[in-house]
Length: 233
Ligand SMILES: Nc1ncnc2c1ncn2[C@@H]1O[C@H](COP(=O)(O)OP(=O)(O)OP(=O)(O)O)[C@@H](O)[C@H]1O
Ligand SMILES: [Mg+2]
Image (tube, rainbow, N blue to C red; front, side, top):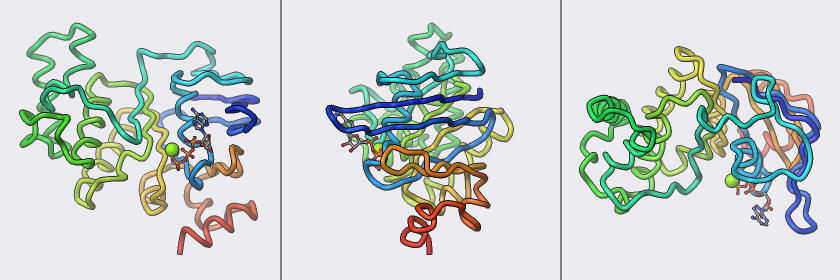
């Protein structure tokens, strides 16, 4: 699903936290959103996911201005778990959609397997470690097969092995199943491994948006060069 953003603005109080003239998120690709703390990454994702109001601007999803709530999902920086088992948390989006029990069980087991969560299925989700919580939130997001995924630092608390498992799943989603993924990350190595293109946000502005290889090898903007000099060596 292609997303097109025009003249987007968001202010909190007197502070303008987003001001994006134009942005196109390509369909069926992984776009990494990078930038310093407070750049507006989470705000951008929240607005695109319809969780936060914009002040100004237009957003088109495959050409239509209607937010496709049924086909998209967001995984938060600090995911919230229902006080029940991991199995029930992952199954939740299917339960509220009235999916048959056998189909739900099959999907939950398969995703848990792919993400190394099988041993956790009967543990309480509100007592997991931070990384286990993120994996569970990721599985819960994927279980209903959304077309559009907004991931806010999904691997921030994961160990290298868990990260590789999750990245493999994300890669397959885009390449084999044509899902559109917008991924906020502070891990530039992850952006370089995973993303088709990179969007660099700074102080609410889309400073640079280009193919991943170009972003790291030959950024055009001075601000991007300075950011990379500090963050990427
Ligand atoms: N509900 C809110 N009320 C007031 N200010 C807010 C609110 N949400 C975010 N902000 C401010 O907007 C700016 C952008 O925040 P945002 O969370 O989008 O940054 P970010 O790029 O995701 O940062 P980080 O890398 O730390 O997650 C910050 O200065 C933040 O303090
Ligand atoms: Mg954030």
